[in-house]
Structure formats: structure tokens, C-alpha cells
Image 1 (cartoon, chains in turn blue, yellow):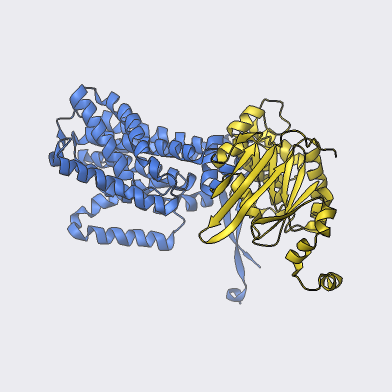
Image 2: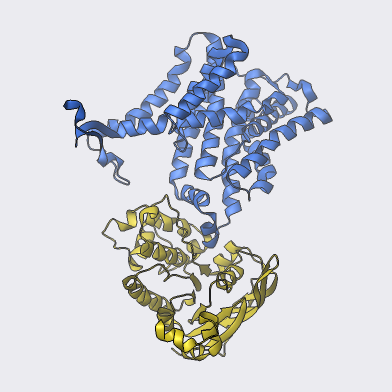
Length: 338
Length: 266
């Protein structure tokens, strides 16, 4: 008999007070911790990561993960808050890497200067080159932005400029591996919270408007191309930052920095992490990049396992880890009899 | 209302033509609008009403012809520049930012350069907090302030509110001209009844309105002058009585045979 009674899942919001827009619950420890705990777990977790992993090899994996996370963050920002699906990740990394390499080898600037400078200048170059594609939207932008890394890599190869196929060698590394890791983790956390804040400001609203409905933005007397260019600049600065760090980590910059891994993996990370959450893609990278390292032992079968994991995620948790996690965190669920 | 027709018209459209491939959507349409006036544009489906709006506001490129706003040629300006000068429009197919709450929908136009300059509708040259200004505008346009309506996501709002939101988006810019593309269509009689005083109030404030409508009865109540389009050409222009008396207008709407009979059955 018990089996025949119909039941349904009931969802009740928890912590209404702290989630209400504009009201900040600073009165009780409980509500404060409800807000702060997830953020603290992330920040402290990221900071503790280099201390927890065994050996230098895995520490290097963490720095690479953070670079992918920067790219995933930039992809998610452009795709879900501006409506530009960008496959230009490899382009950003390559430009940032070469900029840092040139600044370091030709002008002798130290890494802590080349990284921000390469990011700002490289972002400018990427934005200028992508300017003609800005009238495109969604996947059409993706198709054209995919062309750029291929184009630049072939150009360097064919004209034998910037070191040709050998790349630029003799770049300074970071002073030690701790500086390297905490530098990149710090940048990632800073940009993550920065972008989260940006999308909730009024400029962020306009950018979301560009995604939702660019005709209405035009009808409101705002230049859509200008806002798209601004967003592409922010995204490409993040990508170039990753590229510049990569050049200093490997002490080398070459055309493999235009490899399409840098365009594709961030998208996979966004899919499993949950698009539009900004934090999700970062978590996605923290899962995908180490898995891809673990699977190295399987040789060429690696990509098969990798694909299986992705497909499993899409089938069983298509909303993404972060969207699922947020819902579980903010709601009670229980079965009730109808 | 007495109109100052001797002065330079606020908007002058000169021989505007638009061809989509082989189809001539507009063929040499000219008209003038004076400050503070309400001009109604009527015409059967496919007569080129919306194309006129798109040509004036720069959303599509004209094949030929020119548009002057306050004597300045705006024919080749991009849409955001034209809106920045104060020539705003609503869309026939409503285009709110569906994922945002109603009041956040207005924060976006309040972020525009023109709103910053003018302070928005009723703003005295200075723009206050955008959220507050947005709620003020919404309240004046019929969103009950103390209710949850201004906070509802745009995709969940009923048509009546969405039409008002379209108007509000224009008002946020403190416009000189609002071109309304069918603001009455899809509304119930009572919703229209509450919309009419709003239109009249905008006119009293000196905003010039161009209204494209199929709801002729309501349009004739508010419009000072009517222009009729048919097959991309201007058929006639005048007061509502003059236009309705015109045989060609009846023909365009009801066909050429036995107009009286059709009217009797209608």
C-alpha cells in the first residue's frame, strides 16, 4: 500500500533573508556564515592547494589548471554575459605569451612587470584584431574567432618571424615555484571576484542587455559595438594574462601556445561547471585538467576516457556542478505525500 | 491644441524609399511632424508603416531619401546616434530584457549618455540613483510602486505592462520624439482606456509622438493628424474626419466593392 501513495519532491528556500537583493544580513553569525562560508572554502582551498599536493609535478599541474581557469572564466563571461561565444582562447594565450616573451628577452623586464603589461597590451591587440568580427553574435562569432589562433600560428611559421617554429627561448622563469604558484592563484582569485562584481554593476547590466537584446540597446542610444569591444578587452586581458604566465613558467614561447586546447578545454570546463556562474568554469578546470593528467598513463586512449567523462556530465548533470550545488545549498528538499 | 505650423518642423521626412530586393516597401514618402503634435500613421498590413519607423530611426538603410530632425540631416546616422539626439522608438514585437526584473530593464537605458546628460524623464538635468529613478519612472507609467510588479522578471509580465515598459524605455532617455509602433495592439479595452490618458499626458509635456496603429477608434481620439500609407506610398493626410471621408482609404481597407455593405455588416 505504501508504494502506491503518490509522493512529490518539495523544495523550500532556505536563508531567504540573506538572499534578498539589497538586504544584508549582518546580524547573526549563522546568516553571516551562510554567506561567507562558500567563499572562504574556495579562497582557503585554493591557497592551500599548493601545500596539499604531492611533489613538484602536481604543483606544476596546479599552475596550468589556474591558467585554464582564467581562460574558462573569460569564456564564461563573454558567452553568458555578453552573448559572444568565443573560441579565441588560444589566440589570447598565444598573444599574451609572445608579448611577455618579447618584453622579457628584448627589453629585459622582470616577470612581475611583463605579466601585467603583456596582459594589458595583448588585450588591446586582441581587441583591435577582433573588432571587425564584433557585429557577429553567438556561434557565428565562435567560427571567426577560431580562425585567429590558426592564422597567427601559420603566419609565424611561414614568415619565420618571432623565432619561427623554434619559438622564443631564454625567458626568465619566476624566482621560485612558490612565487609562481601563489602569483597565479592570487591573480585568478582576484579576477574571479572582480568579474563577479562587474557583472552585477550597471555596466554589467548593459552587457547582459547586449546579450538579451542588442536592438533595444541601440534604441536606447548606446553603441553596441563599443560595449562588445569593452567586454572583449576584459576577456582577452584575462586570456593574455594566462598566456604571459605560461611563457614564464615554461621559459619558452612558441606556436604551440596557439594550440586549440586553450580554446576547447575552457568550454568543456564551462559545460561541466555550469555556465553563467563564473565560479563553475573554474571548478570545472580544477576537475578536468588534473583528470587529463591522470589519464596520461593510458596514452592515446586518454581522449576516449576524457570524452566519456564529458558525455556522462552532459547526460547526468547537464546544468553543471555549480548550478546544482547552488540549488542544493539554498533549498531544502523533502518528499511529501500528495 | 493649436499647432505652430509656421515654424520649422521637428521632423521632416523627404522622399524616403526602401526596396527589399525587388519589393518596393516604401516609395518616395514625405511628411512633416511639428513639435508637440501627435501624428497617426495608418495603413493595411504590409503598407510600409514599420519600415518608415525603421528608416527614420536608422535601423535599416534607406534606398534613397532624407530625414531631418530639427533641421539637421540624420539620414545616414547609426541608430544609437539618432536615439542619442532624442528620437526614440518602441518595437512592435516587444523587446524587453527578458531575464531582468522590470526596474532593471530601465536601469540599462538610464546608463546611456543621453540619460546621463538629461537626467532622464522628469530629471532636472542630474541623474540620481538609477534604481530609484527607474522605480519613479515605472510608477508614473503605471507600475504600482509598492507592489511586486516592478520587481517581476520581464518574461513573466503581461502584455499591458510590457507595452508600458517599451514606452518607459523611451522616456528614460528624456526624448523629444517617441515613435510608437502599435502600442495599443494586443491590449484589452480597459488597458487601452488607461493607456490613452498616458499618451495625452506625454503630449502635454511637449513630447512629439508618431503613432502607428491598427486600432483606429483609439488612435483618432488622441491623434492631431493622420497619414495613410498603402503599398509603400502616401495615400492621404489630414484630420481624422478628412481621412475617413476619403473613398480611397475605405477602398484600401475594405476592397473596392460595396463599401457601405461591408460597413453595415461590420
